[in-house]
Image: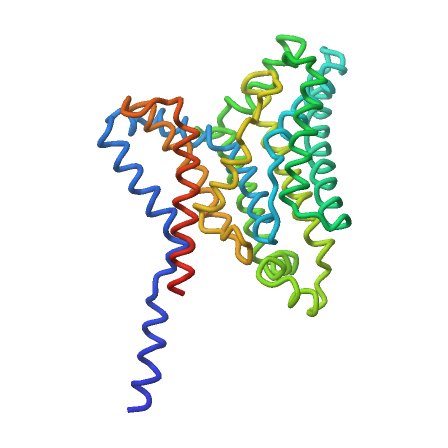
Length: 333
């Protein structure tokens, strides 16, 4: 009799669904069905490929945002940071002689990654050393980065200076490997690395521990400031990678580039199952969340039921709904 009592709850726990983890994938499946019902062109392989490819920017930035949010932080500067880093990347590439395309691309990539890392480091140092709320810090740096790119572009646009350089960069966004778009391969690689770091390393465990309970993590010997600062550096590096994918698409940046990317990144993370309060991080949920956002926009364009100019409003509503769902799931335990 006692064995049956013990085995029952264990069996029930073994079959219990992890709703926060599975919910974004259920939502993705439902969206695919909705898209097909609204317009059969939605299921066209070329359309689906475009949706996944266009979501690459937000997947990469969202992976970085997952680390920041899992550690109890927040970064509102990613959109303006991307525009600023993109401007630095273009200026650096334009300074390289046009006959040396390989060197120009290498310099541009180094500037994008290095610039993103330094911007992230600045956010992290100010937040941790200054003991200022990350919301305030990154709200301030959002304005700083946006002003800097506006200054560099003199209110206009910064563009690659030669057609040859534009052509050399195009494969980074428009190219394929074995039929798979390069941006998709990049975001899959970033997601795999992010998942391993967050779930299979001491740093990842420390990051989640800080978000769950900072005091307990401190008493356990976790270097709170260092770990949290590194999460912002990771976010900056991810912004640099996303910028390397973004610049080849248009070959230019403007003061309006990356507008509202911070909203999209946070939304992707939240609907992917990562609590905004921190304490957990779901990398693959973030990937699904980013694809969901791009898929919603695509369905709106194909359906003609809602103006595409309201995409931002829909995305804003999605994050509110996702937060309400998260709160209800947390309440139910």
